[in-house]
Structure formats: C-alpha cells, structure tokens
Image (cartoon, rainbow, N blue to C red; front, side, top):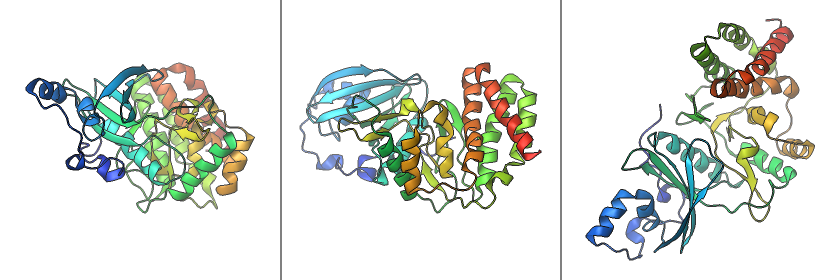
Length: 331
C-alpha cells in the first residue's frame, strides 16, 4: 500500500539538527559484544550514533496509545520518543514521518520532529522522534485555531488532492491517490472506501446503497466554493492535541493528506473546539459559503471509520447523517 522502505526518512533529509553519521565524533564501544547488541537494537544504535548521545540514562513507558507501544528514551543529549509495533513493517511509520515532516516544514504549528524509521530485527518496526514535554492543559484554543489555519494556508500542493503515500486513519487504510478533483477524491477515497468496507465487513447493504446515493449527489454542496489543496492533519481529535511547557499548541499522530481545509473539522464531535478556536481560525482562513451545510459531510467519514473500527455503536450516527443529506439534496 505504501511507498518505498524508509531509508529515505533520514535526519539529514528533513532535520539538520542531526548531521550524517560520518560527522559525529561520539566514541562508541565497538567491542564484539557491543556490536552484536547494537545490531539487535536499531533504536539504541541510532540514538548512540546519529542521535549524538553517548549514553541512554533511562527508558520509560509512555501510555495513551492503543495500536503501538511508546517509550521515552532519556539520554545525555536530550530525550527521544520512540514508538514500536511488533506486527507490521515500517510503511505505517514511514507515512507518519512524512506527514509530521510536511507539517513541520510549514513552520506554523508545533509537531514532533521525526528522526528515523526502520525495521526491528525480530519483526515489526519503529519510529524515533522528538520528545515534547507536554504542559498541564491542551493550551489556548484561540492560538490553536490561528496556528492550524496558518498551517492550512502555508501547506499547499501542486499535485492536487492526496498525498505521496497511503497512510492509516486509526488502523484503517487511508487511500491518498492524487486527484485534481476534490469532490471525486472525497467521494471515492474517503466516503466510498468506508462504505465498501462496511459492506464487506458487516454485509451492510443498506448503508452502502444509501451512502453511494449520497456520494453521487455531494457536488451540490460545493457550488460556488473555491477549493484549494491544503495540508491537513487528518485526525484532529482531543487525544491528538496538546500543548508544550510554554503553552504552545502541539498536534501529533497525524493521518496527513492535502484536502479541503474544512475536512480538518471532521473529528470536531470529539475535539472540543469552541467559539474562540473557530473565530481565530476564520480570521486567517475565511469561512466559505455553505460551511455549515458541509460540516456533517466531513464528520460522516469519521463516523463511518468508527463504525468499521469499533462496531455498531456508530452506525446510527452515520446513517442519520446520510439520510439527512439524502433528504436535503432530494437524492
């Protein structure tokens, strides 16, 4: 599903804080025992070479995730955040690193900088990234809204709508094949993909049939709307929003792609965005005609994904949105 192996994700490619290994003067014990140990632990090997550390002082588990194992590595050159997954290859973490890198390069909102992705010798994969010490709260909503809008304004694509690799939304594949047509892209690769998944997984022909009727009619919701491809986080809910020790907003665990800016609010039903967030956002990215009418359309993608991931508890919400739009559009 993904692109090439992440030998392409390297510190020298995206983040010049870490020079190539040949420029690092750190002395590392190269006795046979140490060499065997290092080769069996690529995370430790990278931290003690390209990570510029001479020793790892502490490794602590970090909670909060349900798909991967997360750890904090404290060293004499700072801390690193490491995620591992013993079941899958590096493609998922490669896509995450590319998304984090794209957001970081906008120079707008703070995200963890990705440093290295690779395979574990016993199976599975890992990603090493910047460790950010979180503050006591999720930060100022007004600042979050402004910074997010600045990212949308800065992160543009000449390739259209999509992303260079497919990625995941939760653990569901998210198809990012490039398209010049947003309505086609959203109908096929977002709503259409989830509807097909529900049909295959649950035999739910009713939601599939009604959902496909909606997909064929959504163009009416975009009349007189100029849609530019904007870099989206893609999975912006409360669990993926925090702040650093200075109170600056931080967003993490993305499912990035270039899409209509309004699609970023598809998880707003569990993000807690308030009036100050939206007011600040729209000062930078003005509200487009029909925004309120399209809001539930973007929520539908995530309700369908939750239905496919977690079961029937989310079906009624998805079906209600579909039926309301079918009535509104007389489809």
